[in-house]
Length: 173
Image (tube, rainbow, N blue to C red; front, top):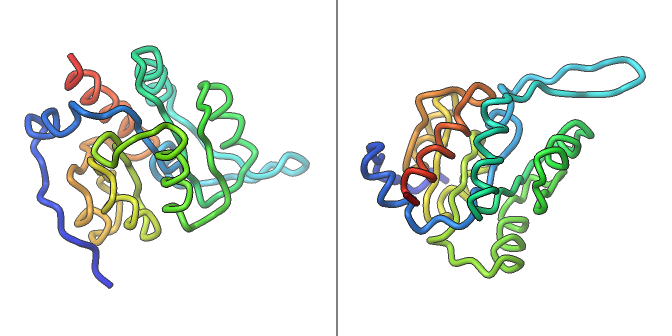
């Protein structure tokens, strides 16, 4: 089933849409990372994360905006990254991301209009369609970008999250 089309927002119109945002919910692989994983014998799988994105998330948290992660992957490096950044709502290992999204909304008492979500893969589409604001990085498949309000200029794992964090902070004044 094709994703519901969402009109693409310019950065100016994105600011208006992000004004209500109280939580930024993020996929990890392909959003907080470039989608590649590596394996170290005796340690397991890992990924590279952007310090720029991490600082953007910390700025949101310092300004009272919750940051949450939902990943179909279940790598220890993802858990450690979430812990290091102080992300309290982190869900791993389930491709049904709507379940975690609804748990986050219920736990934080949020309306859909108060949630922003960024994802880059097919199983992100249900949340992209439900969140008040949705974004995808430019490398996402066309059907995923079709479901998003905004496509970042920066790639996943290389500043895409920071771009969205900066837009949220600008929208909030």
